[in-house]
Image (cartoon, rainbow, N blue to C red; front, top):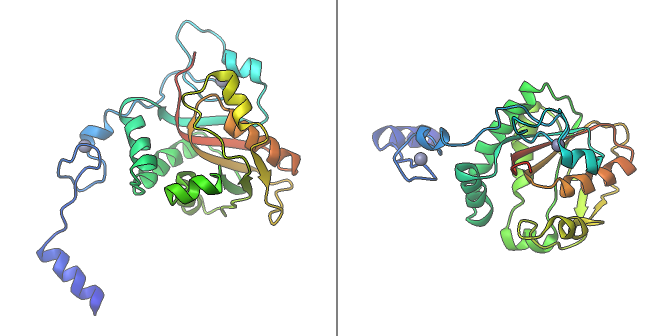
Length: 236
Ligand SMILES: [Zn+2]
Ligand SMILES: [Zn+2]
């Protein structure tokens, strides 16, 4: 009865919805205009890390990946971490607009389908408990939950962030690597032996964070690890 009543009220007084970014009235959380300004990675991508490759670069693996020799099988992201895409992630992380996680997960699911990624479990990149307490939620976990529904796969929060690392974006490359080294450990409640893993995070910058997670998962016996992030930095 209450459901019927609220449906009736909604019909009489439809809830006003506004675009989370520009504030214009729209039935979606992100209006068409704003969505159209997201810079999706469409050009040739690095086969390992998924970052867009410059036209003049004629190899399939970027220089960063050649040097890094990443443990994960491959990484994919939807859009560049700039402009509208960056704003979305900032609103989610720093303004607590959790609804944005679903928008991002939708984009990430497009990639999963396009690349035909097959996994057994979804693992979100964890936050340290101090940061989790401060923010109140882990954005990667929420995105992972949506993907878990879409893909009909279990989500296992099997990694623990043991080091309260500094924000990565304002650190140089070398310090970034040190910052996250040995920052993760395994929650032994989970057995990842021979499991193919979809590792979920918000942004792929140098790849150090997901690489550290991948190392821990591999050490625990995981099979191939596929990384999916909403955004990635510009390749250099
Ligand atoms: Zn808008
Ligand atoms: Zn690469």
